Length: 371
Image 1 (tube, one colour):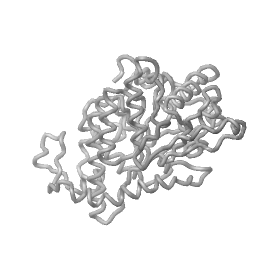
Image 2: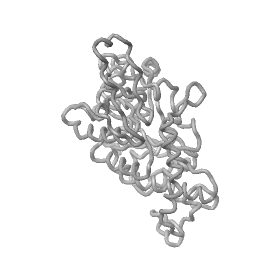
Image 3: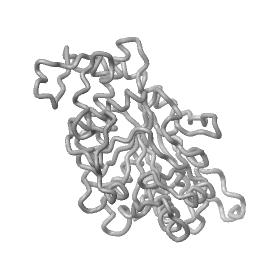
Image 4: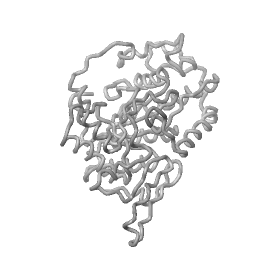
């Protein structure tokens, strides 16, 4: 089932998208007009040609940029979610993002959105698009592409883009390789197609987390320790669906504390802010800038509306009642005098230690027996 939301002119978060009219028959031979852009900067073209892959990747806003690593824009944070959509878990992630007015990018595994079994997932994808979120390809079947060549690239890159572009009715300018692994031939393929590769700088390891409270605290700690970046999470994981509201609430609380201290907040932004042309930042679409400015403008009022407890209690400490967290440590868990013992547990690697993980789970976290 092809999504009809773009061609019908669906309103997104910052405005409405309108499909291009069909040119008269006597002008059919003229060059096609440039793609329509959504108010949030994505290209939309209701006349995509599934047989011409280059039309399916012709995104002048998101495509044709150097690889995004997540360290390009300190002081802001972009949330990204992989492996969906999953109708059982993704809606909770969307609810939280909309509640806290946080943009995000979803990297789609396209085997989830095809055929009869993919109808519910396509409905989730439709909601992501209608809500103004950005999407990118994450392959067809989520294989490790570290050594991929030829037919595997045809299937996993070209095939995923063909499915996603025609389903979403827009060109696809972003690709995230599963596990962040991509062969040289794969990168050549992306460059030829004009597709931007997107990695991350904040790996939450939510796919192997077991303690929701510790995962929530870890994500906030990493964002503040690294002063923003590109966050990697997975909207198919029940634990992520469970904690994301709390993660975003913690971010807002920390930003409110920063404002109270006369400091700059770490503003949640879309992936557009991390795009580069060469070494220079790419121009951010006006509507995307406006959305960021709107978040900043509304933040003080959101802060006023928040409950104002004198302290926030660490949920996973047996002695929490006698050791409350100060507002300063809530905003910056790594600050001087702040207790960091809660980092130990599911995630000892945050303290420089390593935990043994089966190699097959490193290669494929979705494999049987991997958490």
